[in-house]
Length: 131
Image 1 (cartoon, rainbow, N blue to C red):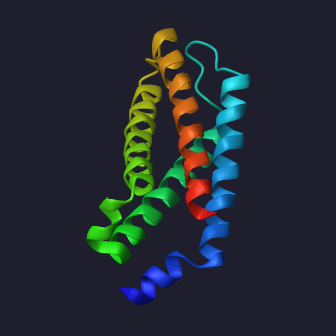
Image 2: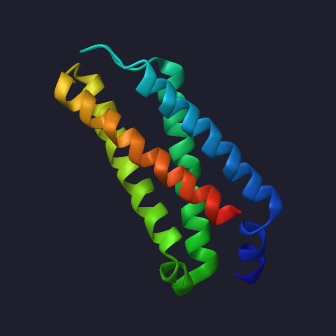
């Protein structure tokens, strides 16, 4: 456990997290600046980036929880970030399901876009935690 915690707090892992944050924030900014049209799903690269980054953050959260044990829950940064990762997974899964049925309406699209702002705030919190 101590070894894993050392790895999770290492410079290389922290730099990888910051790189993922930058990729995710760029993807979020792109989707907020250039909103999708009604019934037209995001392009495949955006979808792949979203799923990949969220998967990497899920892995990071799992390893951090494993390494820290109960201490994980004492840091509000960790709890907040876990909340955002879980909600991101649910939103992404919901979006993929809705896209597969071509059923995204304008209201759902704007709700998902506003969630992008919350994800961006979360990523700033991740960078602050890393620093």
